[in-house]
Image 1 (cartoon, rainbow, N blue to C red):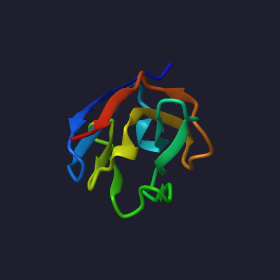
Image 2 (image 1 turned 180 degrees about the vertical axis):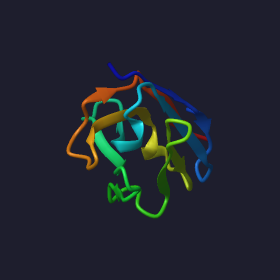
Image 3 (image 1 turned 60 degrees about the vertical axis):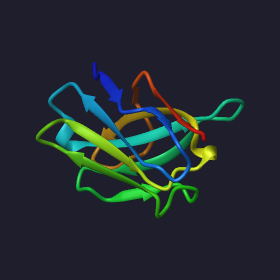
Image 4 (image 1 turned 90 degrees about the vertical axis):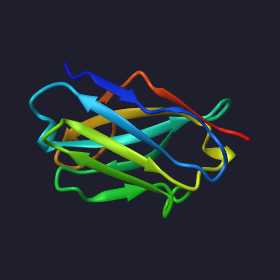
Length: 119
């Protein structure tokens, strides 16, 4: 069983930055595809960014050019660097782990971390 623990959420002003971290348990992290999802109040959960085992990335159109997903296999950690934050980025952000190699959908979910963008 994989456990995912997110940290780094909080309150930030519009235009600010935050970096989310997610530490994964287990020995398969280096070959796992990872992703970040988010869910805003009253909205469906949506994919934000994914990264495969080689480091290839994919982003939602709404965050392209502002968010960057990365991974450190030595630390079993995936990151989401969020810049130029907007109020519409306010949501609970979830770390996910998918299948091995390429991301085809979430298999495991973290507990989520709240990000609030407000002045």
